[in-house]
Image 1 (cartoon, rainbow, N blue to C red):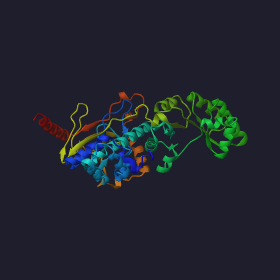
Image 2: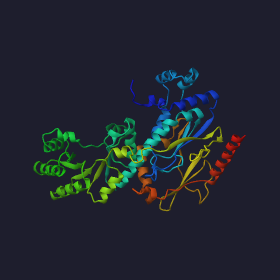
Image 3: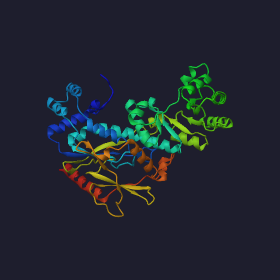
Image 4: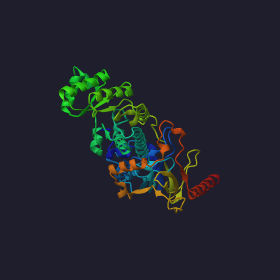
Length: 459
């Protein structure tokens, strides 16, 4: 038995209460069409936007989710489930539809990222997996977009695999980072699966295994001409001088030097001076070591002559904002709007659409959440509709089959259209939020449904 989660095992990657609710719905005959909204309630203090990511994996799951004989045998050992329900699960298929914001689109709190419409048991069962995948990938993509922005056009590579939370996160994270603008990953399997360029240098152990670092540089560059070598295992600037000596006396081909410890700004300036004085102006300087957008911004503000960054744990874990308040809430059942009234956690009823407005220069100006089918009023709700049908009757539409290259290009284009204030790093709490409004018609429907609920509660 293997713990690896593939398509065949994904059905049980859920919370127990999803299955117990589904069995209860099924026994009660509550199987009419239902619509659920997936959205993020609020921005973390250090975020001004989110970059939507994870839809491709969601659609893959919905296409393939099945209860295998092994899964059913396990459920049969639990005290909750009857044989009749397990027989129903044996034939389970997702048959519903999905509308979603395209991956690589900047999004904001309290506007639907994704809408599922399906028979109530089907729509309920998939909640946990959908929240997991959208949350993790959107969280990482958003962090990576900020890191890329801070690098100001310099190369950023994903070095995060070793300290991320499990192998699934390393795979989905590498894809999310690439969508956000990261250029390469150290994760070889992610390179194979997604076609992302792979990159890497060497570890300190390689240097330490040789009698001296010059021998290590000679051997590695001899095997991989034009490679990057790590120069800070011992004395950093002495390592730089050793590289220069080998290039000048043995014509060793070195493409870049990596700095991984110490005062990166001062060492980069010292290394750049030594390289330039030796005429090695084409040798690049790369930095790693607990980097994130804040540290990169500080390094560049200090004039550090760095050409690229390897960013690991802090990007892969989204260290300053490691969770998102993502929810999946019932909005309609059997043709009637449903909503939650709880304080600070209220929702809006019915199927919805998100209208995005732009200024004359293409800058994103604001979103309005409207009732689905609500007429767009000139000068008020004119704009682009963000929710697209990506699955119908359990099968992807053409809009749900986008290439990674298309998604990455969209992200770069739309991130460039965010208002400049949303790109600020370090004082996010003082930034004027991006406006997300609710249309008058949707508010009126919410008021009507609220009144119905309160009348029933008082009767």
